[in-house]
Image 1: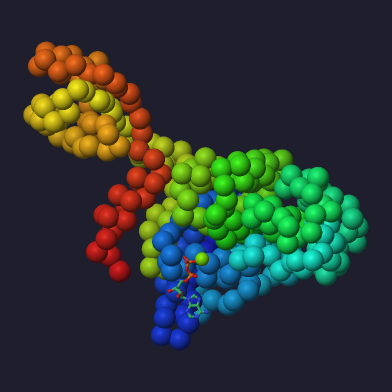
Image 2: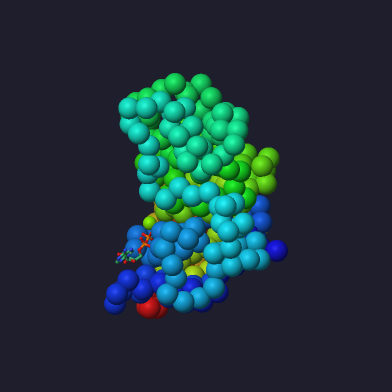
Length: 301
Ligand SMILES: Nc1ncnc2c1ncn2[C@@H]1O[C@H](COP(=O)(O)OP(=O)(O)O)[C@@H](O)[C@H]1O
Ligand SMILES: [Mg+2]
């Protein structure tokens, strides 16, 4: 069974179709990276999954049941936009208030657990307004974790975080899925960061899912290349172009996509009096994959 199965989902706001026949499959236990440019329909889709707004048409199944099913609804935690916190109250009080609102019986125990999960045990007495952005985002996640959800929907939770904030968030999200069996949908356009944690990806454009794949499938579909530096880059490039069909310059390196091996390239250039000063093999990143896909789909609408 999948955590989320969406078929043919549509949402219109008046004339504007924000989501148009979207399909989406999120396996249980996944960290699902939901990727798309601004205005592509990520937040609208997430709001529908959480029942915050209603679809114009289509089907949303959560754990095999319709998304309106009460049992299933109560197992969805959500962070869309900033958490509704009282700035002058402590982190602890804010969470206790939320737990009480949700009707959680042992509020203290749940709050302690949620704070621990987001690495905020030490900051419970801080006033909310004095917390850093990274801490605020984690408080939002702690709120979403109250009531032990099976599914967490997080809308752009890593926007604006510094390197340290990103690292803690990465640990928290991995921990939530590995040790608590939660499934997480996380929308973001910070692809380098997403690539470190996501097990699955969905790429949305103009309200349609244009590609879904697992991290393994992405890994297998990303071409490897040999990147090199030589003293005379333009001569090296001209020579490589004679032998290989795809040679491009990127980040100060020459990339050869259809190379047999780096030895073959070094030998070839050496035989033509060009010395290679640096060489490595690498794969294209999620970001590059995404840009290529967008260019390929450029004319679609
Ligand atoms: N409440 C609304 N009323 C009218 N248009 C909306 C509303 N919410 C979103 N939209 C429009 O729907 C499209 C998708 O928005 P959104 O889901 O927020 O995209 P994303 O989260 O990917 O940036 C955008 O063009 C946006 O302007
Ligand atoms: Mg959005």
